[in-house]
Length: 488
Image (cartoon, rainbow, N blue to C red; front, top):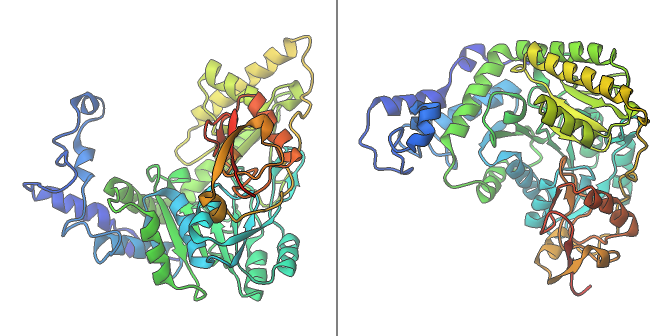
């Protein structure tokens, strides 16, 4: 990646707020805590107070996110330079608002948009806002680990064959598990059909800084992508960036759409963290990624020595982000849910997520060998304990495969505004859902609002319900009741 190094060595937003603070102002603007003066002492006694002075609002020093002309505009231009794109937007409402804005910019009511079925739930929010009609393509399955894989060129071509009027393809790459799609191939297919390629690259802001990682979305020819810079770099939670690199959409309209889905009181701590995260990536990106890669290589080597444990690698899937550790202990009878609980409760090792068969560790430059050694020690002890059990048997997959795409009776927007009623989960089979239902993590919808709850979907979700797993979208989070469309 080529960027202007001299410019990248600056932090315009950080510097602008520092300049404001150094004027020692009599401050009568929002927020009410008046820089570092008014935060609860109970909090400042634990963390200090200086950082709170950077929680400011729009001033002549600090610019305006929704109409940037100064420090914020400079910070956005530095992002565009670093990622070699036409335009970058700082986001303070997470990748969720970026995904919504991309969909709003691509397809409107009465138009079609292709959506990967393993897309994050924020895609449905974008569909509700835009009114577009989704058509879905299914990801491949990586059977060895029981997780969803890539969206293939063949599946996208088949979808365009049935729906040649699709305005765009929206997909996630890399996935939570680090699985990527061959984006350059998908970009070519989309552009041949006059469609946009929109990528939820929430987990991939680091992909551009090391040749050992798969190609990033913007390098591969995507028209727009959104990155959660807080997930794998040093930005604060909720800090993201939307990149535009295309003449196929109106970049000014993208900015207007962002105004619909972002706060009118943007958090300057978040934006400053984005400024500083970009500064570190520009100067040390390759070394930062190398640190994570080295730790993961060490972890994979040592995990392979632990009886009953296995870890996903390039032999499992070629386009894998190798800074993710997908670990399974199913050979010694432990589900991912059980393994996560033991790691947390007994060894204070916190994993990012668990599913039926695996746990996931997101490894970054900020992890240490000590972190990995604690994980390895815990896995060795767990393997030893399981081996001593007389009834320990390999895990048999209990959950059925991810369900097929059900009948779409209403668009997400139509369903969102339709009259609904609440019924018990037992009565929901065959009804049209009025809400998205997505086991979390990883937050992938099993049924969208407006789709029929088939017997296959009902059985699949019942497994999560019986295991008391958290479910996003349903009103109670437990599927005791569910909202269904009243008159269809």
